[in-house]
Length: 424
Image 1 (tube, rainbow, N blue to C red):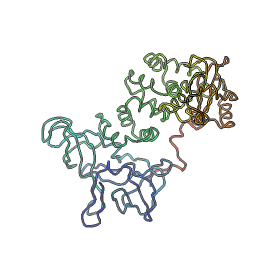
Image 2: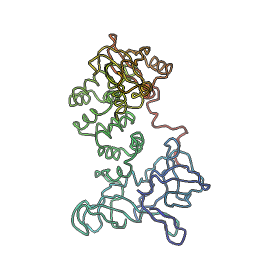
Image 3: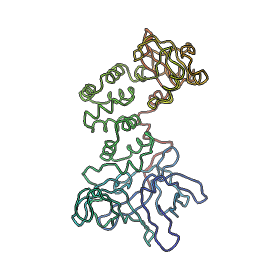
Image 4: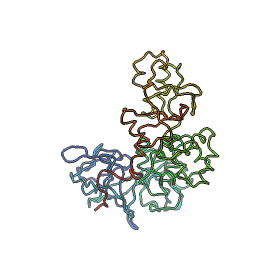
């Protein structure tokens, strides 16, 4: 745990334990949380720690120089109160400990092999400067002082190769440190990494987690990541993505690459994507997902609520159960109506959903414009709405989050509410 030096003893601690620590101004108001630590790796001498990346409101990341830190205590970083709100932009000479040093392989100076960095210890010198002094490492190769797989705390002077490396870095320690992040937050982290590191970290996520993250990334980042994967794994990831997000991603790929991935995907998932690709991206058909909750009229209220609790159903889609005649896979039998979750919660669990249909809801056609979709959702305060063909077969549903993605500019993830500027 990081401690404050209130006596002559220097402050010291490990960076991974500092992540998530609350940052307070002098009067005790929390202003953000520590996201990373910024270092400068020098040709001679230990790396210098120059500041913290602090995440403030709206996931905005700003730079806090250590010269403005008056105390680093268990669970708290105390500042002078002067927090520059300009967005953090990493400089070429800077290295982020969490994002770029954890999991980095380095050579032991005694020639006994390679170790992988799992944590970084920093210490405040009598000059008040902070430097990296220790590394918690895991042995990659046997021999020397400890065996393969063993861990040890060593001096930073005992290794070489802390600077940029072309060797694959891995991401197990980074993901262990940040494993509880929501998909949107992890996507934001990946977006801020250098290209090579972004691919390393993404490649170590399991397929389901990576699919969730890709759904939150912008087009350039997710095309880059998917293209870096082995083609069979890329197809597996597309299989577990939401069909509308997978279709959006496939549409951004070169035609030959897209065709190859669709061939390797599960046939049913690939067919869903092919159907979605037939529509323009600003039409209802291009916005919809092919996997909303669809039940027959004789299904019980209890069954409807169980489907709404499924982890793969977004909150917006869970608010509405579409009722149709079999078959229930899209395109379904004839559309009958919907049952709203709020209504289902008020009814006996053994009652059939067909008794509580909202038949006044007018579904959309796949060729309806984005403007028509937006107006319909806004007018009736829906979070989702079915899409049917001319014969009233259900093709899918559009949720409000899909509409927001379509309305926002393509690079909205790269911007915040304030003017961006380089750190002064």
